Amino acid sequence: MPDLEIPRKAVYRLSLYQRCLQRLQENEVETVSSQALAKAAGVKPTQLRKDLAYFGQFGKRGLGYDVGVLAGSISEALGRTRLQPVILIGAGNLGSALLRYQGFRKEGFEIVAAFDADPMLVGRAVQGVPVRAEEDLADFLAGGAVKMAILAVPAEAAQRVANELVGSGVQAILNFSPIVLEVPGEVVVNHVDLALELENLSYFVR
Image 1: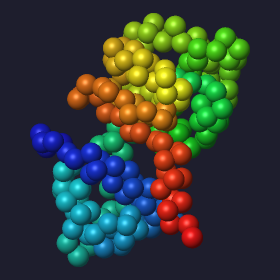
Image 2 (image 1 turned 30 degrees about the vertical axis):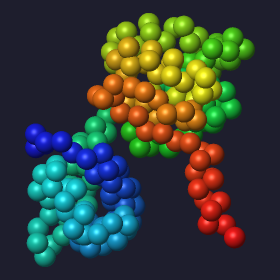
Image 3 (image 1 turned 90 degrees about the vertical axis):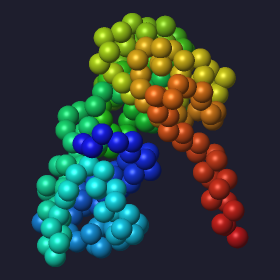
Image 4 (image 1 turned 180 degrees about the horizontal axis):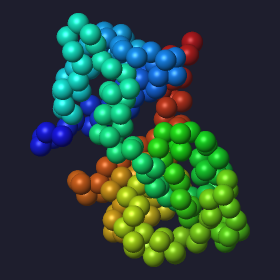
C-alpha cells in the first residue's frame, strides 16, 4: 500500500464497494466496469477510480475489474482476510441485540467477549459470547490481541470506559453512546447516534 494518508471517507467507501462486489459474486458475475460498480455504490466513476488508486492498480481499460480479484484486494486492504476480534462494552438491551446480530461474522468480525457493570448480566452468555464484569476489561485486553471495541453504555459512563479502552491499546471504537468521545488522534471513533439519525429523517417526513 502506498505510504500516504488515506482519507477516512475513502476507507468508508471501500466497504461500500465491497458490499457491491459481494452481491456480484453471489450472482456469479466475473467482471464489472468502473461505471457499473460506481453506480451500484452511489458514487461517480472518477471517485471510485481515485479511491482504488490509494491501494494499487486494478482493472484494465476496456475490460473492467475482475470481481474476485478486486474483492480479495479490498478485503486485504480492510484487514478482513481473517476474523477480526472485537469486544462489546454494555450488554443491556442494545448490546444484547448487537450480540445476536449474525452479520458481523459474515463480514469478518467476531465479538469475542462482552463486558457490563451490572452484576445481574455478568456470568451469562448471549449467542455464546460470555458477559464479563467491567472491572475485568483491562486484564482481558492486556494480551494486545483485540484492537476494536463496540461501546453501548450510558452517556455518563462512555468517556470513562473509552479512556480505559484507549489505555489498554484499543485503536478503534464503534460508539453507540449518545456522546462525542474525546480520544487521542491515533484512535478512530465512529459514532452511531440512532436518535439523531431518526431526528434527521423526521425532517423529510411530511
